[in-house]
Length: 128
Image 1 (cartoon, rainbow, N blue to C red):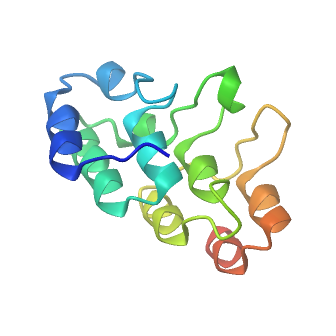
Image 2: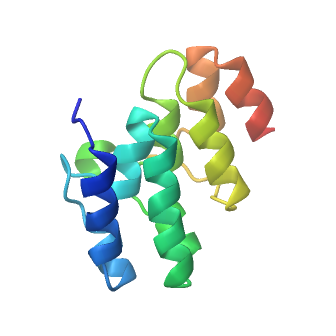
Image 3: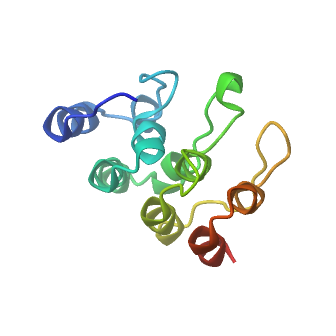
C-alpha cells in the first residue's frame, strides 16, 4: 500500500490544470482518485473531486477507468475491491457525485456484483 501524505497529495491534485492531468495514471497505474479510493482516504478523494468541480469535470473523474492491468475499474470498483469490507464511506461519496454504478469491469462484473462477493452489506445497501 502506498502512503499518501495529504499535503503533498493535495499539492499534486491542485497542480493539475486539465481533467487529462487529473486522470493520468501515476500511482501504480492508478489515477489520484483511484489510488485514494482504493485506500479509503476520504479526504484525498474529496480533494480530487473538489479539483474536478473547479474544472467542471466531476463525471469524467469519478467514472475514469483504469487500464487493463486493473480490469478497467473505476474509483468505485477500487473502493469496493480493496478488502473484505471495502470503503463504504468512499462509495457513498462517489455515489453523491453520481458515479456510474452499472458499469462492468473487464470480467463483466458490476460494483454490486463485487460488493456481493465480499458480503459488504453496507455497500450493497448504498448501491441499491
